[in-house]
Length: 170
Image (cartoon, rainbow, N blue to C red; front, side, top):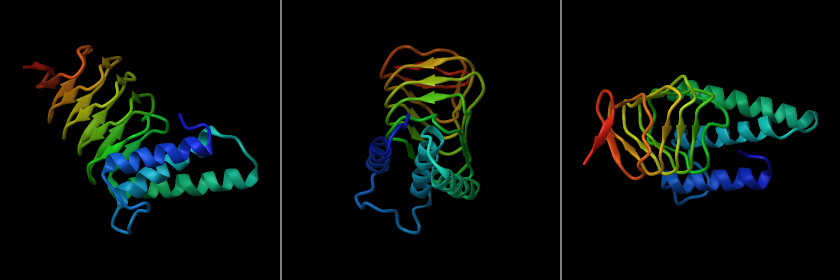
């Protein structure tokens, strides 16, 4: 969770690296990166208390974040993702505000992380169209295949899960 300006810089730098950008500032066409920047700034202003100017800056950042979310088709709650978030490209992505996702998560389009507060580990790849819901835990390094429906716990690290309902593959 972002608790200081140093944390904010660290999260934004990790997101930039995980997105694969070598340049330091987003270009006009980098709408997904801009969304992630304003997501992180909104988290900072939400988590850190301050004066009147701090509150105004927070309202501004949340407004831009919401507008970019509408343009991209993203609905992601604050403080769900640790550093290193990578959204592949524009498309519908819904993440419940109670979900907790670890570092270096890669999300593709049409992903839905729904009700029940799923807890997802570090270095998880979530393929296009995956649905994750329920009070479940997913271990570190798991790859979730396209259109998988995950509604139970997966504790084995570094495995691949696919199918409806999801199960391990060799």
